[in-house]
Amino acid sequence: MKLTIPALLFAALIGTNLHAEEKVLNLYSARHYQTDEALYANFTKQTGIQVNRIEAKEDELLERIRNEGAQSPADIFITVDAARLAKADELGLFAPVQSKFLEERIPAHLRSTDWFAFSIRARVIIYNKDSIKPEDVRNYEDLAAPKLKGQVCSRSGAHPYNLSLMASLIAHLGEQKAEEWAKGVVANFARSPRGGDTDQLKAVAAGECGVTISNTYYFARLMRSTKPEDKKTVEKLGVVWPNQQTQGAHINISGGGMLKTAPNKAAAIKFLEYLASDAAQLYFADGNNEWPAVPSLKSNNAALASLGNFKADTLPIATLAKNAVLAQKIYDRAGWK
Image (cartoon, rainbow, N blue to C red; front, side, top):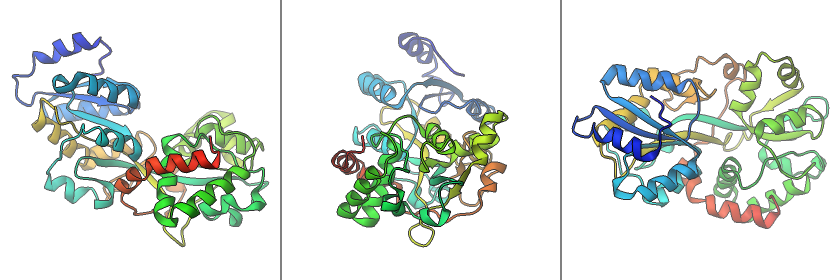
């Protein structure tokens, strides 16, 4: 059930359920996908636990949880990107969850003691087939090569997607080389960073630039679109899985955890375990053109399948979170606005 009622009325509504053990779960979610409706409805069907949901942007939800303090009705916080989960962790909002089921289902590099990944996306290199040779952009490091001067489009360096990519490069290359890379990419910009990943894809297809970095689900959305203009965009673009001979393609996640002040902790743990179940994993991942976090499951998404198999970076997601602040400093020094 998606609620849009004011906060006080919401609190009053759930307050009537507090004495009904495990019959309600209060979810604060920064995911905004229609397919999640079926995900939550299935949880209620299986458990009898009603899901009350508040949706907003990550920063708004985090601020709300902080302001509500010990009286917060929220049981679970879900968002996208490890850097955003790390921010909640740094604020001390999550409670440790002990669950053998979650430990068995979610690989160690896709979880911390306080939060868990439930779907995966990769950050890949997308190039214009007419102007760029795929062998020239095999690795993230190639984007800083002088031969690509005036060819690179990008969204803001301050965006969590790029911050997490930089965080991974810091871990693999060290701070100095990561900064040299950032400066090299900035020197190759075709224009100042602006827009989201879809804007970058369209700019590459239009020839405004030759290459960009994008999360895979943005490209998959265009592939699945029935709009003629989107089909034309896809036809002009090629995809490279970066760094397949080294660390592998950078991946990020959607995930969540239980809040320290959760009034329905037993229901919260049940919900997190439910998200790691087979059916929920496919709902959760396919809803946004992502891969399940449980490695034994295969996505039913034909668009993703058409991109082929790839070697993924197994750097612990928690490491990305730890390097996020330094990543921003490096982008600032490099002039990646």
